[in-house]
Image (cartoon, rainbow, N blue to C red; front, side, top):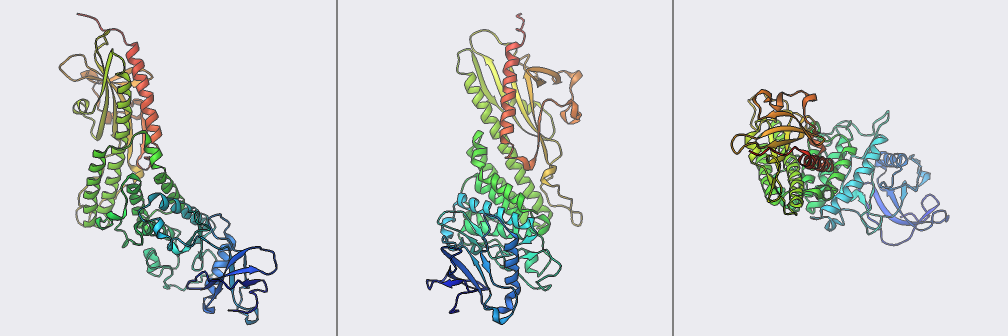
Length: 503
């Protein structure tokens, strides 16, 4: 170790070192000039042949100014002149060590993993915005300033910076093999920011599992089940990891999208508080995921994409239905509090009557009189979840004729309310649109007006809520508000309908 201060300014304290890596040793230093009070970490370049990586890190840290990226305090000259002394970088000390050394905090702890994942995504997104791709995202490069879970991203020594000359020769492998994207392992020098998406996905699973990594894209393999704790958050995180740890063509492209998805998973409990999935639905969903995951292994491209898409669809359809049914049950419970009305949830009667095509669920609020007064013909409010475009069948495509798999954005759902009136004990109910407390055009029941919903034009549809597959569960509150509004309209409709004639 040098006897005089580094750069005539930074003097080692003589205490225990702070470790090191491929580039050099890290020691505690103080500023003998007094300009920077306290102790700092000085990383000394051990191998002068790695001067290009040293320059890379200095240049990258100078570009970056983000609270989740370690700051550069000082550095030596970037030349190879011997009289300038050893090359070094001075940074703040991460007293809380790194994520690799604190992995016990994350094993099976979905909250801690998401907290660190969101911050790391924010740091990488900031780097990508100034054309810096890290290429070395791993737990050891996620530092903690203190004992909490706030992080600094560090070690940009092998990052790719957009500039005229490349520091990495073609075919030279960069990045940690355990966490690197396939294109990095193949020696591709011109990589996109999505390589950091891949590595961050591997890091999140590594932390959650206590030190394991996926072999490429097998996130849904049964061997990894034990690494995910119970609960919807872990299930949604697993779906997200499947879109991160993937070949380039199927991988999430931007770190901003990763951050948004991580926030959505982190806020799942709040989003789902208006209507969580019942246990039976969760069990059925798990069985469906297991089935499509098994089918996905039979074909590594089209079949896997179809299976993943169908698994996501099943989760969305089950989640939306559970939320609506919970809202309808709550409304029925409140209606029954008096002694004059009865109400309940039904999901079978209208489902047998309706012939809408791609119909997934019916949730029906049925209101009837008890002993006081007389309602007109029994009526119910029916919520129908309808898919505008046909689902992709889960089956193996014919050889050499693999169909194009639609993106999740192409799956569009309509949630529509109808009023069903039962005029007699026999025969189907009459189904009408519900708008602003009034039953409008009759769709089913009158032969002259019987029109399949699938044949209606956009302008002829009833009041409806339209959303794409990726918008759930982010739009859970909008679905809840939609149900509340139409329950209100339905009660208004019942209270203002003409009294039925006797006879």
